[in-house]
Image (tube, rainbow, N blue to C red; front, side, top):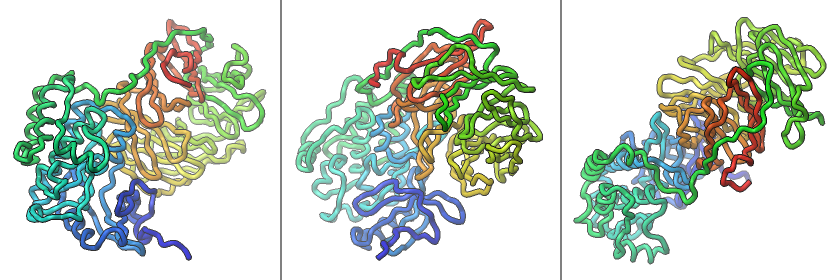
Length: 591
């Protein structure tokens, strides 16, 4: 017998599982007609009684607030019910904690203030959440960082019910106020849980751990220990939020939020920039020490690594004015000879060199050329004006007009010279557009409008499939080695590395502290390099693990996994080629 699908397939298409709990699963899904991304919270009828389901639905429909994951609709399927909720691409606050990402004190206080704003709204509606914890704090991306949205009102209580014994209630003992263990509830119970969350964001762990019985004893009797390294105002706020007796705590979310905002005004700029929790292992810092460099005939506009399908050696190609030089590489990634083994001459200066499954392609002005060792460059196709190639997958090529950014051309007959490109325009871009190839069938166009980005996903023929929205501008796009994933630089100050996953739609954010001009991937993780010669390395969990300063200022970069970065410079009027082996940078990292 075929298994029953948990999805109302008529209206939504699943993009993947994003979470699960005791009552069901949460999926990222897209509405088939509108293209809207939503969270489908599938609630199993066998695990969640109708009474509880209707309770959560009633609470969600009555709560409309920027910091609450709002409910849009109710769906039904063969195996249960689905709440259609606002989708948060940043995952949960627990995800941030598990990736060991640091947040500034300013960011932490902003998140806590947003959680308190959500609770203030809920409490004003006479609703007590009763299960505040990092897993129930969702995150949406904004130009300034993360925005918190409170979710999961499955065990919430109305104020008039607080004196009733709800022995069937559940909760999370690590975040439960002392009275919660005796089935008592109040607004201040939620505020106690907020205090535990704040403690964990600052110190990297909860104040108490152990079994349910051990946690009960600790919450009832043990005082919370706060290190003197925390600012005095932060310690005072935590001490009051975590009082054992309800009467000594903040009574209302508005009261705690006002105290937090007032305390924030007393902190210095340096204290607000300080990052928490403190890492167990510091970021490995190194300074580049120049090795022997190879002189070049001209300033390099582009570098590309050609890895052929056959047994031929890999090649490093450099665009030097109207010529292209090529060097053969050994199996370990070193140059076979300092002098180029191949050279091609073109009529116009070379803008880009592309590595494809069928060899190397050069772009000069409005024409694509095929590069074959021992032969003159062969024109593939010519466009009406100057074009640039969209980065990414190399089984086919999409070029973008420099004069009209919404004008694209598909070149898929890379083995045929000449070939006729398929021309098309994107329908909706209104701002700055950037393209990226995803796989052998799809590409996307990032349309940046002010402080947001619309990601238009299309087939290789230009047919629109849907639009994903991010409330932050993207300034760089780069492919990843994993399918349905790419890298971007984002944020209002252009200092965040974003790893964007499409199935399901999810965003991982890491603060680099620099504006990068090149993004790539090595065996250690993701690498960002600035035009000023700064390198930052982020592991695949999103944690900054290394920074390298004082690289020679690059004019072009080529990433050569697993360990190498090729870099060209133009210092003192002398263009040079450098090879950086990350194993030789004196980083305190085990390779």
